[in-house]
Length: 279
Image (tube, rainbow, N blue to C red; front, side, top):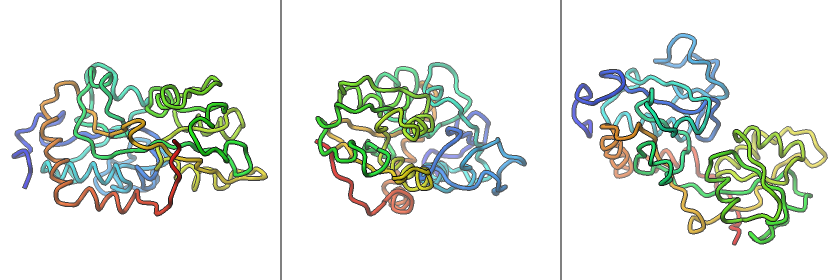
């Protein structure tokens, strides 16, 4: 049963339908699917999705989005996806084309001045990824040890905030428009390490650095940061004062209570790998 009543009574962008959004490109384990495949309910030709395709329902956030939508009363054929090319545009002030947007966006008071956030659907730990096991940064065991290295992260992210407020390096950190640019800088030796959430670090290490042609090609996750250093709860983004926000919150609570969200986490996120905490 829908948690908010008939979908016709909901103030969605398109009556009787739900318009969802994520970044393009979007990467595993958050998003999956093949952008060359025509998935059920996807418009002919799609929307020029790159790397992944949210219509697949694969990946943690795609599966969670469909679970939230289902709890709200929407079936997959009543869901439309629109791409977002600029990360920070999703939580910039102003009207939104989407009903809600999901792209590992951390809930922050400053951002909440311009948009609504749902209740969190994920708690993320940040991590440091370096190139290879024979580099000096690969042997780091504490936050203090990180201070002397050139670090980088995507702009307007909690990852960059953590560099600035928690690590406080003695070398000026580098800021990039997105994680892809930061990873390129790491490959090119322009920085010693990048800070990203732990799940993204696993994907970068295991997929994006797997075939990188250097004498020591594999990446290494140097360590992760505990939540008490920087609480990093991730929520869906809605237009400021959206009438849908309470309904999305009810849906998230419902999929938490019935075990759906945990099952999605177990399928897409759990790695079974122990990464040391940097203190």
